Image 1 (cartoon, rainbow over the protein chains, first blue to last red):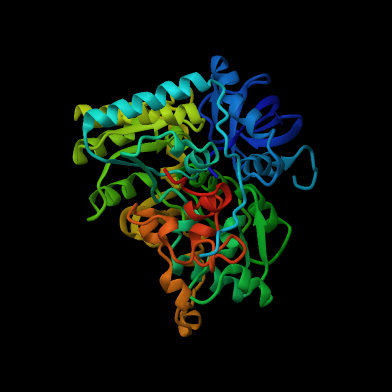
Image 2: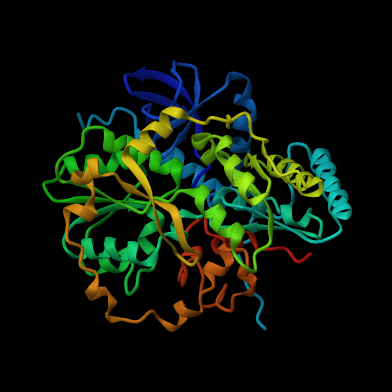
Length: 98
Length: 376
């Protein structure tokens, strides 16, 4: 799905950021985003990659649609897709690889 | 005739600013009156269609304005032989890792789900990153069957440019949106007077990529976001351009899209992939519409690493139901799901006949969930 999901950067470790998506902390790759990203910034995550840093003045506007969708039940297709994006990203510090 | 029982989505309009929504709808009504004939515009994004259907936007639109979903679902346009390649590799013992929607897309005689039932190993993943990790954890061959438009292809490119183990390869069915707009614009029987471009794909490509299209086809393109108000505002601007006969590219989603786009992403995309012509399921041959790995990356290209023998899959003719599927016409804007005799009967999300009923981005599945095109 092309909606992606926005999140707040908590920590940057090289090319990987720890990102908070509505309380769920996941890793997002920073290879693709075209601006430096620092803790406190918001990024748009798509299939585990930050594709854009969201300008500070646009954050609230961007989050509003997702806030609305996340109030919906799982049977709602858009809500399920957004939850999938949040849940799908790699869990924090799995330690499984490297 | 029996009444269809559909999953009811949200039927009432819920906007953060209902007054503004009504004002935009009134503006559209006025514009259509000024134009004086029916206008068809197309968007090419599953998330746009989800938002339009979920928030019931079509009930707000003037009768004279038809908003059609074009080939905006990457899973739906993945061609049958591409699925066959993945199925053949799976049946040949390779682990196929892919995005969830791809598993049930029908091939000539089998889907990946069918192959799985026959003992093949299919792994559903969320990110290309996981396919590489899967390969690291095994000595078996892992083939990442990669689908998606440019937004998703960028993730595949980033992974290929990183360190990958020798048992990892990519079977690319990635597709590139700008060329298919040209094809649909020229299709006989399709009179599309404007395109609504998808916000997040344009975040990668930039809005300026559509300038050439506008120049060639004299059809306006408006980049729009995904909120109901974003879409309505995008439609108002688009229909204004139709009325004025002044085709141009207008970016109505500047909070996410710039004219030049994400240059870093574009550099990675085009370093790994080249665009080449190929069939899009149900649509047509689309020159430059397919993204394939460049020669430099032959070592991770499943098509070059393995001899893929599709012949065993071609012993069966497609089923009679498949032959009745009108997904292609729906994506070309010529037919609508409600005009398909299979929709909601033989073809449902549980028993999909065509790819448009498989994917959450497919027109048929979206209409099935949200009750479809309201009767106006």
